[in-house]
Length: 258
Length: 330
Image (cartoon, rainbow over all chains, first blue to last red; front, side):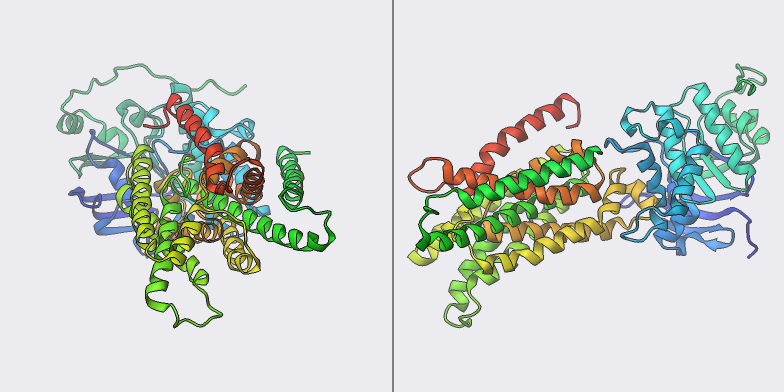
């Protein structure tokens, strides 16, 4: 199997323990250098599919490969070195310093007694710079706004050194500016060759910010391809039951750097 | 000087002061040269046992609070202490029924006590996890812990009434159940020291895993933590620490809840800093309570657990009320 092919999922069937399957044979190809969005109505199986890819939800059938390596066969620490997951909401409420939260991402690189070494510190610094959170380093996590917390979680994922990032609705609680900042960070990572898979709800956001879309409906792939092809009247009508107004809505962007 | 360094300095100064108090306070007259050495030796062992019991319970508190992601958890609130106590009583009774006269003289019943305490504490935590371990929020865990604690105390009471049939056995069971560190010697220290030191080492070793668990089991697992393995080891060591404390000090309440809580604002939430601070803080708390045991006027000596409960229970109620006000009990 060739290297650096990105994430390839074939025939994924998954569901929560003691419950029915939620994902029924999903195929997904997320190449390096591109941002791939998983979309679909509530209950379509987006988050479940994402969690199955990092082993948080049991996989019943199907294969999941990153650059040719079978993700399901990897142990937890080895998988965490390669794939980082950013949840929609964190349960972290303890008054932990932001830098310590980001340092959590280095867990799999340190021995049981190991204090952060030079490589760890460099990775933490770089991750905080990428997520633009250096000024927050000494703040405690619960005192941050939702947008700031989301960027700290992104930095934690980046600090792990993983080159595949799976993010579950990272912009759902963010205002437009913070959402754009997050998308800018994701685009920079994709440009550096990362695999980015992101669950999104907003159709216009997906159309404007991601490269390709996998549209799920009731746990199955209803459409997949370039964002402009999938966020189109026919697939949207079939999956969401709404009419897409081409050219409708407002647009926004970050101001040019001066 | 950093806040953590200041906290350590204060902790160590207070530790020296309460240790001195524990040696100097008591009924015996230290100016009597004939008895001074005996008094000092007895108080020294008593001090060591109180310190070990306090350290064990406080570090156990750090472990369960980290595991349950819940600062209102502690070995006594979760029924672990009562489970350990029940296990100890059961061992005393079984020893009398099955092994009395058979076991060699150099291996008295009190040596088997920790094993019973460990099994009792393990059983209590396993039951708690099976019933409420997956429930979201604090209430289910606290209620289950309360009910289990009541159940273990009731069964312990039943066993105690059975033990009253034999005067000697009844006296041993009552003394063990009420708790306290008087009349302790090197055997008790030898018994508890490796367990408490091992437990503290384990708390340090699992500290980074517990830090990640502050984000919840799902996020911790995504970051590479083997959550099931952490749960098994942390429960095991909490049981060992609680058992060591109960075996030498009896049912000493609220230490595991109060001490980590009191220290967290000063040393932070990272478990690697919190665990050793709790070990010293727990020792200070119980040694201080044991000094109060000697100072409070009473016809007989007040059990140690009564004093720690008198301090800890109001504090726990205050913490509970504060958590309810902040909406953290949902």
